[in-house]
Length: 189
Image 1: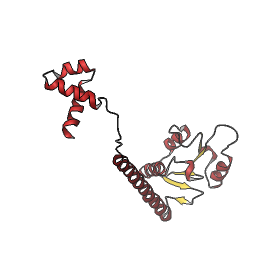
Image 2: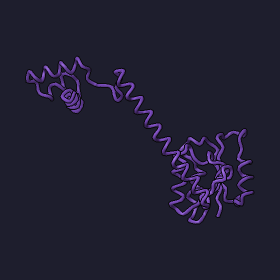
Image 3: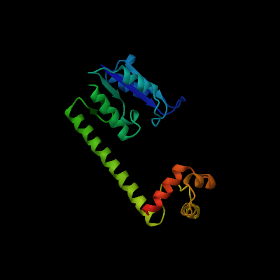
Image 4: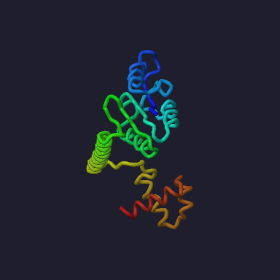
């Protein structure tokens, strides 16, 4: 059975699913098996998509007019299509002529998977390069230190003079876990 999914980005009347509906019906989707959402594709909560996915059975095919109507990003699209495949459900996109029930569609899907992996690798590479660049300029990422250098020196002096860690925490208004972490960092640097 063919199940159709349509989405437009806006709830107002300027955008309608009429074009998508016509294309899906012409492709053989029964109008009673059409599901739609009128909201941004970036939203996680898409009730029409949830209903369509719940209705699909092994052997069915989910049909969309265009790939961007289904997935928020390439990685999200691949995740959805892989989940369908694991359930024994095929996927078809009319505009891109992608049909996972054919060898060509499987090839195209594999290429998309490779592109998504490449995209993740590029993002990771850029993030690491940015962190390294910041580090060379003396900028360290992460959470700001709760105990500044001056306060830490005063705490260490108090500890050397015999003050207990509990007393240090009370006198310097520092949580015990924060104190222990700061002292560990000091000994490792």
